[in-house]
Each structure stands twice: as structure tokens, then as C-alpha cells.
Figure 1 (cartoon, helix red, strand yellow):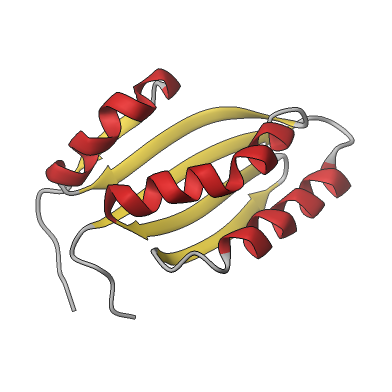
Figure 2 (cartoon, one colour):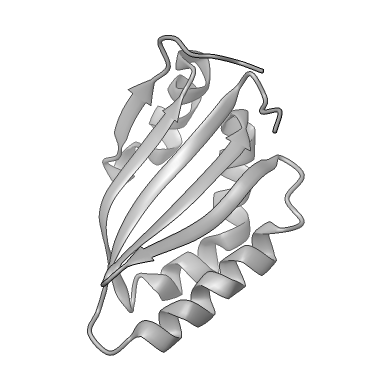
Amino acid sequence: MSLPANLVTIHPYFKAHPGKEAQIQSLMEQFVAKTRAETLCSFYEFTVLDDAVFCREGYAGAEGVMKHLENVGAILDEMLTVADLTRLEFHGPAEEIDQLRGPLGHLNPAWFVLRCGIAR
């Protein structure tokens, strides 16, 4: 898979409320369906371990991140009624991360800045 040089990944971790597994499964499917049409999305998937829910997602730059969050905002609001957001991370090149700090700083994420890696 070829990824954009300005790739920004979001790493949200949720803790499901007891007894809400079926509703969370439905919401995960809604997130995927809504995200499928986003042209700046490189990958998007959920993984689950017991009551922990993780979304692995990557976008072409800060623009892709912001468009995604606007697109899925209503679903995210619903997810937060059945699960707690326990950790949020953004990973990417400094120039992209810096564009997100202002509009998303209120979420108190961890900001990981790319230092080196392999591009194919």
C-alpha cells in the first residue's frame, strides 16, 4: 500500500460501557460506511479486545483529518454515550500536526511528531 507523504493517523481508544456491545458494533459499522466515501482517507478499521475498542485510521494531511471529523461528528457523539474515550493520539509530520493543534487542542490528545521512517 502506498501512503501519502503527509499521512496523519488518529488513534482513539474507547472503553465500552457494560452491556453496550451490540450498539457499539452498529456504530462501528456506521463509522465505516460513512468514512468509505472520504477520498482523503487511506485506511480505516476497528479492532476490539474485551471492552477496549480501537480505531486505526489514516488521512492525507490535516485536511483529511478535519474533513473526517466533520463527516462523522454525529456518530462520534453517539459513540460517546456508550463508550468513554480513554486515550486519543495524533501521529504525523510536524507541519500537519501543527495545523491540528489549534482546532483539536480542546480534546487534549497526545501529539506524536514523525522523526524518521521508511516510505515505499
